Length: 257
Length: 346
Image (cartoon, rainbow over all chains, first blue to last red; front, side, top):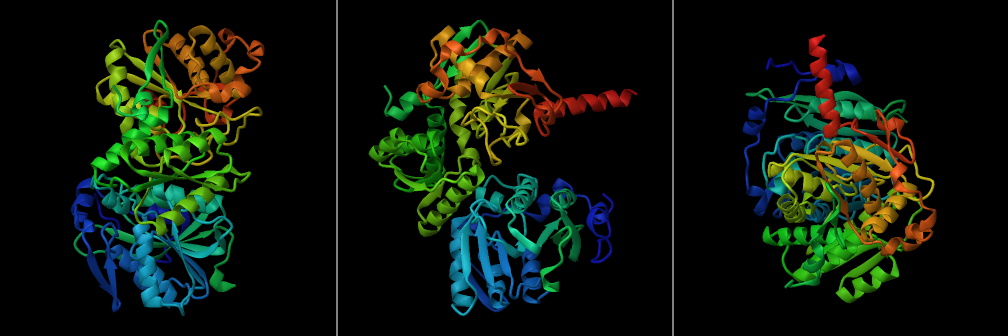
């Protein structure tokens, strides 16, 4: 496969952006980048930005892709101050903590794994504390289980969209390789139940280890516009990781209002 | 001798309705699925005896899970709507299952979401609760492996057509999967009610009554579209005629899903006489006496009933349509492949 040059922010949007995105890497490359590990079944510790996190068994430890989102939330590239924020797949709770520290109006932490949601609550209470915004922990299968009638302004989502059976272990599969169908459900429910406020934005991070183009197409077909916020071109391999801002067509950003 | 009532009713009977047409008759089909799922979760160490299994259900699955939990020494908690009937409520209480009723909503999607939301709250508060997710977790396929073995052994060798209501996708999907894995030539034919989102018919509706259990207002991940060769959509009036005809000709007293499956099975048998057709009868007819069997003398004879063959779900017409062109289905894939091959010759 001929490496494609990364599409930098501002170069293309929507379907033109889609057409320039790299193809999904070969299965062998994807497997080499994601070697199986049973560590998720252990109790682990994780430190980031001077904060210490405890990870019970079954709770996913952030990788480099997740840290891209964490850093951009922390440095304000992804604004959340004064906004209602939802962390889709809250894991151990770093996004929720950062959003709390950065002054979100409300934080919704969603995960299909109950222990992850409990872990997020513990970290939020310890690091952000009672002075922070209200945290709403929700066990939900994507948006299924998220309360009706509630809207959010900002969502971050790092979907487990690899489409290879990297492991029979359900904890590993849940966190890495559900495939594009999770993106389809995410956007169908978000639009169908009108959960994103007018002017709201979804920050989606996907690499070409997953069906990158197909997932962007799902968002575009669901009525979103797409632009690149950040692209990471990792040294030593052909992986490209894109952080997209996705907005409903015809709405202005909440930060402009 | 069975060790438990759940095991006594879990396995189906194979009943020949006419040559080449076989009814796979269950007392309560989901008991087979629930027993297999709970057994698998215990064997895999994902739950322990005494843990609580929780799910949202307003009917048969609640009963099936309660029985499976009773069999395996598990606790069972059901989040249902207030439409759970008295017969089920009393049985759940005596079996030791707890039932929590959430106010019903006029919108089925909202109703489902409200119940899942409540399940989420329970899971946060109770680390020893396990969420069964009957619509999404493939563990609900496992119990049907033994049924597939029975079908494979008892029916004469040769091609099979399996016909059944799609519902959660577990029963038809599992039977086709396991039979094909065993090397059997299997065509899978699914049945949907008008209005179901599962195969994209949400733009249609049945003015009489939706056949509960075989369709859905939300997407179920246990429905694996690529397993199906052909889909039929059937209205209540025809399913009712099928249920009455099934009872009249064979003595099998079964519900509307079985009635619909009987009609479709007859059609499939006529379409491909060299294939043995086996259709699923998931429950008994007791719940349908007032809605379906009362007034049976006015129900049309089934001999003159046939489906409209349509090109896509956009062309569906009541009371009975069929197509093998459903996006993502096995039938659609086969057709696409044929078209592509035809294209290379031009």
